[in-house]
Length: 140
Image 1 (cartoon, rainbow, N blue to C red):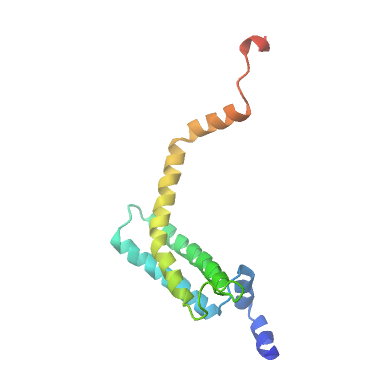
Image 2 (cartoon, rainbow, N blue to C red; image 1 turned 60 degrees about the vertical axis):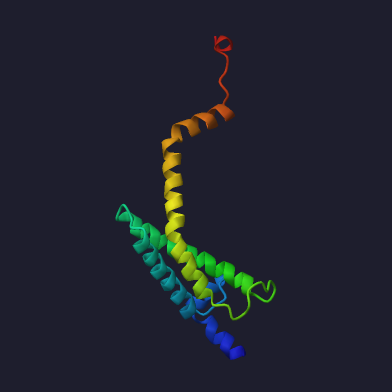
């Protein structure tokens, strides 16, 4: 057992995953990331993008959401928490997060567009909140 732990600690992939809080083998993790990217492309076929840049955003968001899902599922599968059974396939949860990353990214882009259109109003409100307008008569 001690030799197995020592040999696993020499692999930098295991150490990076443990640093992220993911308690699974690197080959399982990377297969889940690839499944998430494939699921994002399946979702792309269901609703095509309007811009070529959207493809890269969806792929990046699929990878980020897959990593987050692996972290969360590893935590929920741990013996301390015990919500998920120990034989639960985390790769399937990662694939589902990759599929929904298309819709999450669309929501985030829509929200960013609305914030961009209202930027002047938002900054005016923030400035008025922290720097209230003074009386002109007092300034003279």
